[in-house]
Length: 328
Image (tube, rainbow, N blue to C red):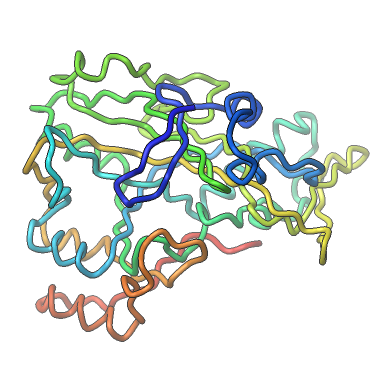
């Protein structure tokens, strides 16, 4: 694995041009020091689901300074860094309806012959396992979240930064932190084909951790819990699944994975949106666990409301809290 210091000053181990599954990542990480891989190599993890999410929205979390910059620029850019090109980072936004549809797909895969009566008796379960920071309402980066439909974001990127052509998506890298695994997707203009040709194209591979199909990202997480508070139980005689709750030392910590989308922009380029559209897609986030920015970059709700009101004085909308998913 290669090593570098990322733009936030954190050390990261990565494999470029690959989206590695956990088994493959373990092989690549053999030579890392023990502390860097102790979560990845944990054994005896209770059974948990591995669903397929079809994600149609992306989120971009930021702090107060970032919020001010986005409002002043009427869009998203990467200020304050020299270089021929920069990356705008977004994450997948898994919504309640995405959890529900992924649960149905998973059950149809496990029990393809289940009856309608058995399907109706099945209790929701997938939300209980969607507990890693990738699924939380809270933020690790700041108190302000912009959520955009993927199609709207890609259309704006195409029109503004690709001269109307379709953006190109590539397998950027897999990053291993102590407990987090990030599968990064690179999105760039066709004008930069040669520049990024070393990275494989992102395809609709049915076995890939992340793929793209029909206007949505297909995400197949292999570690969605972080803290494993439940174990999956198969009731094959009833064509259903159940969960057992774990307590105390029976709740192991494991790695958790997510997908990051890096939109490439050239120096001083801004991905612009109407000011009111920015406000419509803005919500407040509580400070989450394992933050990767300074504590003072988070605001309480009162301060956040006042800041948003000062930046959008003509808006009549009240600032709302981000609602991602809740365990069922």
